[in-house]
Length: 279
Ligand SMILES: C[S@@+](CC[C@H](N)C(=O)[O-])C[C@H]1O[C@@H](n2cnc3c(N)ncnc32)[C@H](O)[C@@H]1O
Image 1 (cartoon, protein in one colour):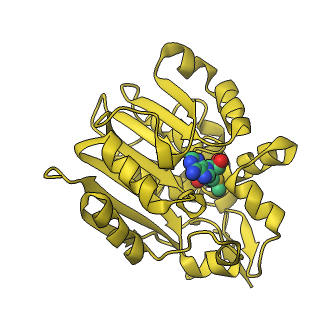
Image 2: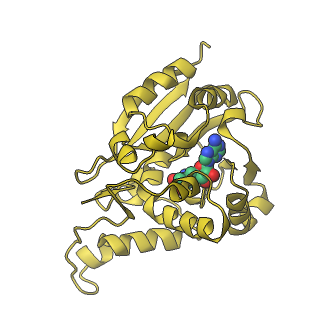
């Protein structure tokens, strides 16, 4: 019996998730998307157009699976701060395993052209690539505490950094080095578990978002995280409903949670809210 770290092939296709139309996807994203559709047997060309062999959809998930038993401490530590050769390998693995969840997260941001967007804990850069590919007018900022993830992203997104569309910063959610009301939208996937002070991080997000700005937090279900040993390591394994309450306390209005489509594991959640305009 195993549990998934992410959504699977039953997640909506990338283009419909983002906009309801075909998404403009940057070249940096393409290999990941292509790979996912091939792995999941979800290729529309193969299934519907009669081109190539007719393949039966696979039943196994496209992402990485986790055994329903505690992960070793060193692996949980790597997930919270990927480092070294293994950290770089892990980051690439997470880019695939968490693609569906990150697609839902970016889609839920409902971004207007020209928006200033922040991502916290970008890891291997899966959401940065989606944001940059989604709309060339977006201005994207990523912050991560791990120096090795910064280095990886600086190489991967060298062109976007040169053009000024992307800014990468080393730092932590709990102390964001950005001015008040600077961003139109912010997001973070698979990251809040590791924050030393969850409420401080959420308050910082409320501070750096403009009034009315949107926040989307993507998390795995607590049951899956607890089974993987996250709670035993003192990490946050709160439910989506509990996170909704914490968002309200931190200064977000109309926060609500939505479960992502999957095939019956504990699944993953998107929690969304807007920076309160009155506070
Ligand atoms: C499990 S990875 C998730 C990466 C990516 N968001 C994804 O969905 O695949 C968690 C990332 O969050 C970063 N991180 C952990 N705690 C953080 C904090 N307090 N502030 C900023 N980044 C943090 C880690 O360095 C790591 O890159």
